[in-house]
Length: 118
Image (cartoon, rainbow, N blue to C red; front, side, top):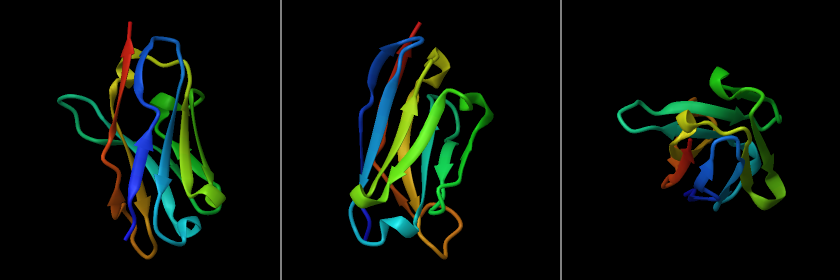
């Protein structure tokens, strides 16, 4: 069983920065693909950033060059550094783990609010 706990959310002004962290319990964190999703009010949940166990990353176009996903396997933690935040980044952010052989997340965090004021 894997548990994911997010931290680091909050209220920030447009143009500011936040760093989200997600700590995973359980074993073999290093084999997981780790992801950050977000869901804004009235919208579907979307994939924001993903990091594979190889270290390769991918991002949704709207956050490229502003957000950076990284992982520390020794600490079983994944991070999302968010810079140049915009009001449209306001959402609940979720950490997710995809453990092989699954192709989509099979573990989710509880979510954390990020609010960007204009």
